[in-house]
Every structure is written in C-alpha cells, then in structure tokens.
Length: 98
Length: 416
Image 1 (spheres, rainbow over the protein chains, first blue to last red):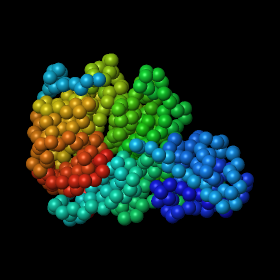
Image 2: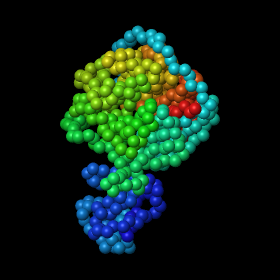
Image 3: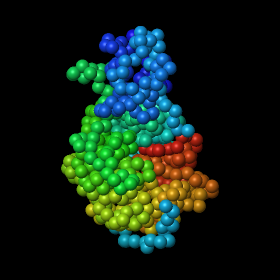
Image 4: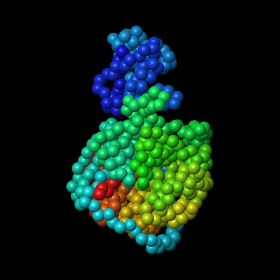
C-alpha cells in the first residue's frame, strides 16, 4: 500500500479525510500512483492532470521524500520509501494568488 | 486605452418601438416562494423565501473556496440543480443535486465501473470535437482552442437530464445524461471561429437562450465573437450581428463577427424578440436576430453587463448601466437599475432601497434574474457581495445579504 496526501479541496471533493492509501501492484512510478488514485477516486480525474493529454495542471506539484517530482516523466520510479508506505506522495496545490 | 465618453461622441440611433400585442403569460401565484441560486468567487449560496419575499434564509457556502461561475435549476424539475464549480488549481467540476440543493454529487464521479472496467469520472471532461482549430489571439496570431471553464449551464425546458454548457474557450456542449458526459456541438465553432477573439474576461460562451416553443432553435452569445443562432438543434449556426456597431473594438465596426456581446435576454412568450447588452450599446431585435437596432435612448451610460425581461411584461426590460469599459462601476457612484416599459429607448432609474452615494460595485453579466411571481421579482448580485431583491417589478429593493464574496451569477427558481 502506498500513501498519498492530496490538497484540502480535493479531499473534500473525493470525500476523504487526511491521506488516502492505494494498492499499486506494478513497479511504483509517479504515473502508476496517479493512475491508482484516479481509479479509486474517479471524481479526481481532470483535477490533477488533463483528461486527454495527462499533462499536470500548472498549479499542481508532486513532492516525495523532500524532492520535487513535478517535472519528472510519469514513468519515473518513485523512492522505495514511498513504495513501501513509510513516506507519502504529496500532491500539492502550489502557492499562487499572492 | 482610455475610457470612452461614448454618450457624447456617438449619435443616438432611435427607432420607433414596435408595439407588441401578443398575449403575455399568466402570473404564477405560488405559495412555495422562491429559491435564489447565487454563484460567487468563493462558493455557492442558496437564498430562500416565501412568496412575500421579505424574509430570507441563506444557505452556504456550498463548495467553499471554489469559483461558481454558474448555478442553475431545471425548469422541468426544480429539484434538479446544476453547478459549474471551478478553480485555477484544480480545473472544472460539475455538481448536480436531485433534492433542491440538500445533497450533491459529481455525476458519474463515484466508484462505478464502465463496461470496459475503467471508472468513468467524465462529468468534468469537456473535449472539443475533432480538430481543435484556432482563433484570433491578442497579438493577431492564431491560437488553439483550450478548455478553461464552464461559464453557463442551461437546462432544457422539458428534460432534467438535458443541459447545455457554454464554455471558455468558447464552445457549446450538451449533456443528455444529467451531466455525466458532455458532447460538443461543433458547428458553432465552424462559424468563422478563426475570427473570434478573447475579451478581457477570456473568450467565453456566456449566454444560452433556448426557444421554449422550438427545440431546434438556440441563441448563444460569445465575448468577443457576437451572437449566433441555430435552427436545426445545433448542427449549423449563423452569426446574427447585423445592426451591431463596434467602432471602438473592431476595425470594421459592422463586422459579421467579433463583437463583444455581454448578454442576451428573451421573454418566453415572444422568442423572436431579443434584447442585448453589448460592450457599449443596448439593442433589440424583432426578427430573432436577423436585424438589431439600438435602444439605449436616455440611459446615462449604455455600457453594462446584464439584461433581463420582466416575467409578465415582455416589453419591460432591465439593465444596470456601468460608467465605461475601464470604469466598471455605476455612474456617479449611484447604484441604479434602469427599467424600460416600452421595449427600450425610454428608461427610468430605479433607486429606492439601493445605495445612491459612494457605490462602486459592478453587476456581472449573469447576475441579474427575475422570478415569475406576481408582482415580478427582480434580483441581482454585485461584485461587492450584495444580493438585492425587488418584489414589485423593481419599484423598491432590499438587500437579502450584504457581505458575500463577489457575486458571479444569480438565477431564480419560482417554486410551486
């Protein structure tokens, strides 16, 4: 199981509190984590990345283990600490708006 | 660009007001009262009252923190509500209620399975049909269409599951499954779409009018492209901008497309008569948009955003003049709704109960609406967060609430 922390407004939208846990059976990549999140919570489709292009929305960031993974390709493996659940993948609504 | 003192520079083009003798609908006397649906920059609010419209209950914020560009109810089922919920961070969401706003769902957003085993979650999926195409950009180049948000939701008169969505970048979508999935009516963008350009608020399809007696006829308005009409259910469209003159916005002031139309209004008993608030100018057509003529008459400014028609008097029209294109507040700091009982040209200021000094709010294009009670109720919301109501055709006003976030849209349901 992996742990994913999503922004407040997406937690409200998905009807979850705090972090969510997801089962990912394949090698954990950023894309596999997002696929699993959207499969479990279809309402989040389109809110983190575009429906068609899958491009990350401009004000969304992906953080894990103190690093910014936002600009990495989706096939990039995430750290083992995320894969074994000891560290969460954090999906963050970036600072914007002044 | 400097603001225009247009009233002094442009000759008034007044034409005789056409006398209309068609019957008006009967007043709807209701014990149920009204439900006012308010969209704001930071959430949705529901304001309810009985038919007296004096005492109000305020519910909200719903979807707190999100921009609610539009919030509308189904004429066929008043308990069916649709909300356009959007955010610069998280994009577009469509919310639906089947119980008048007590509970909400994102249609198809739950953990159900499609036939191929994949979750759906497509109620916020607005994908342009076919080749995306391009439109005019600010620098004169062509720019590809990019979906940004839904500006208007217009439910069908007869089917609660059929609803139209006007979006930015400008296009018209339709759902026939209660908002679960959306399909574009692409013929509209093929109507000289390469000449459309974004206005200051973006290139948005902000107004949809359905003809209650002819399901094949739809009117839309786009900033800055103009007004368009279909007579075949949305397959083909024609620009309906003859008579619009935009010397401050277009090199060809009478161009077929490119006008910054701000809002359209129709009385359901007279669907061939439309009223328009353009960037500058208030206009009217008596032939379903084939020809327009100006009816600004004695307005203190003919710049503004919303326009509405009284529910029982098809020749009674309301506008809220704003000083200019760069000064988006009422002339002289006086918040005045202007009413014409003659279908235009002759306007009277409605001021009782509205601030008449130091008022510098704006009223946006979708933030003026009417109920169908007798006497007709008029409602509008401001960028200062006030929602004002009149229970007597606009003769006097009261603030239902004063301190909401900036109001983006106001719709009214008259409940049985």
